[in-house]
Length: 297
Image (tube, rainbow, N blue to C red):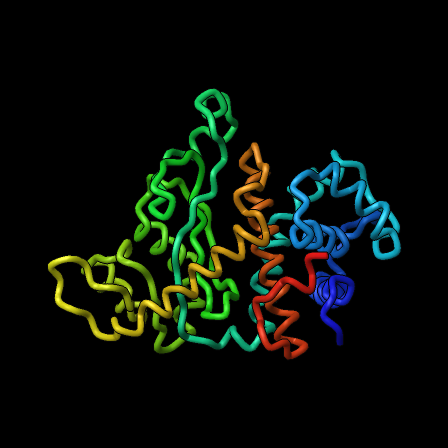
């Protein structure tokens, strides 16, 4: 099996079709099936097209052999937003179908997802009330938008993810994510969760311990040196590199969403594209599981 975009999309199409087969409602089937729609969305993220209009023009010219029917921009946008539950489901299904699903070492962090760059945009945006102002320490600047919280394996395979207002505390968001997936957490033994100093809190660590999760993080100022800290810097770079894949290769910050549904599906689209690349690389035995270079052209 070769590492190119056509092979990835074919394998992904078969996987999605197997998972959702027989779930079609009564009536005339759509000319573009849900499986094809999700594959088309993954290809858009991998090839770096921010504009849906430009993407469809490219797809008509270069991908018509794989997608015989392509909708207009408005139809594609509506179908894609409605497919958010399916995209979220497939992120989990791809993770479960990989060797990394059984890894009990998880890493977590949050990264900014800007949604507006000017005060007038903030005042008239449909995201008001959901998005908010936050601070990006890595760039030493404030932003208006959301934060993407990601819990993944050291290889970058997403286990859990969520979008939240940046004013909400990191521990609060992570606790809610673990509560939503309580069954998943309960089915694991000896989970080691690696984070940064932002998740430091004795009550929070106690709550995690009650769920069977050990938190490994750097020590804060005036705090006794914690166990395992010398090797933590190298491990922490893994989550930074995962965020760099989302931002540098999948253009997370250029998502272009202007509504609640628009931002959610565009972020999910990029998380799915990364998960699909890792899943396929694992399937074919590629030496670097998170490399997307073979699929971006």
